[in-house]
Image 1 (cartoon, rainbow, N blue to C red):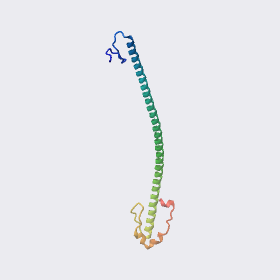
Image 2: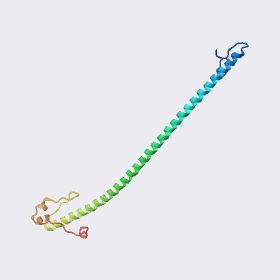
Image 3: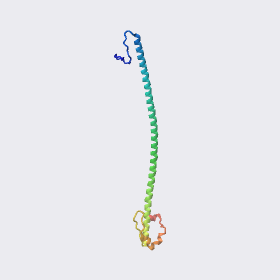
Image 4: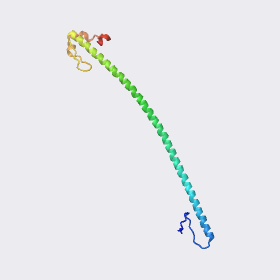
Length: 159
């Protein structure tokens, strides 16, 4: 039933000598098939365009969401960086204060050492904070100094 004449329309030709109506029917059927195929192709192309448009819309929504998340992350990084800089500045101030307090403590330990040397006792400074030895505490000459506040001016402390 298929034609071997190379007809690209896919129509079938009926081999009947002198039948003009049959050939017209074949042409009409072929035209109907061609139109049906064209409509089918158009509908398929329309569905394909709709799928592409939907995919594009989905990608645009995803892009907007990712940009929103990116802005949120950048804001969070900015806040965290500012917090870090504030903590770093506070840490620097605290380190400076610790250095100053360490110097004051050392000065006070020096004053105690001087007082003990004049009163017959002594002070051992074994660690960072300085430890007072038992000899100083048990010396009766030093007992009057244990409950007395140490009075010194700032100028005397740093000499």
